[in-house]
Length: 149
Image (cartoon, rainbow, N blue to C red; front, side):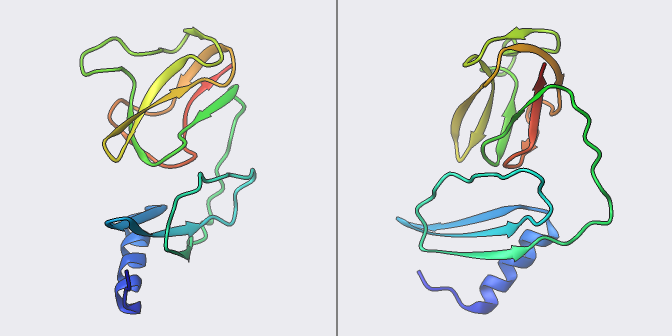
């Protein structure tokens, strides 16, 4: 898979203009990943290994706004880009709601990525104090889905 520099520049512009963090182009068994580099992240984030032929890093525009974070317990974050689902099926009872007590390893939601339903489990035991996204909402890698205290 060979791409012209102009084509790559257009893809990077789409990435930036639409505030995306990553684009993956696949052609059979080959893939190219274009990912923004995050400079102001206070904790290390590890991305699962993806078989790819090449990757291009696009710098993330700097923002003058600082995000204020308040401790609300342990964060359950999205391990991938996808769609958040609070329940196992449309119209079904949600996995958890604010105030529910969960145990480590319990499924708390689903993130759909590339037509695959990925069950997200709590890594800690405790009470759900906040659910930060709505059912069906698109989520980014590392985005906080909910807090467990």
